[in-house]
Length: 238
Image (tube, rainbow, N blue to C red):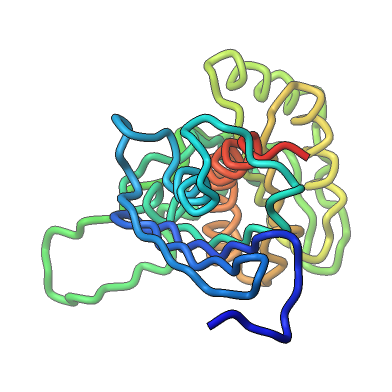
């Protein structure tokens, strides 16, 4: 039955895009609720399941424009980033860290779920390359070694020329004393990196490994999620 208390000339959509199915709940302009379910991946039929589902409920032909006159809002949860992480299909990422800590995230906490295993299988790293910045700030914020900006720019340029466009910047004590991370981010932008994740912005935590892991994941997955959002938004101009 239509909801007599609700009145809007436009549709509203709530979408859950999973790895297998995409589920859509929509409120019609008269207040009625409708649902639709379709495969998340069906390239022979449509480019994107969420957009195809919206068109289906609006009664639009494939490829027909979806306009603000028809749709009030679209709210979507998606496993696109989660799937990319599980399948290791994220953006190739560069880790920039303090000199001497190249292997800090690889070593991690040395957890041993199976204490007596002789062959330890380490998890696959998400970053493709590492640059050690000539810099060091102590826990009180005193600069032990100033950031060598010229050298860092040379090394970032070298990685950029190899095709890397995403960078995670994780410096010792950067969560609290962020000047060097900010400077490194500025240099990365000047070089042309399109995804720059700094630990003091992404995960301002004291522990180096936890902070570093989160920052790398952000750099690894954000471009994938951003491209998907832009792809959906392009189908709904305005």
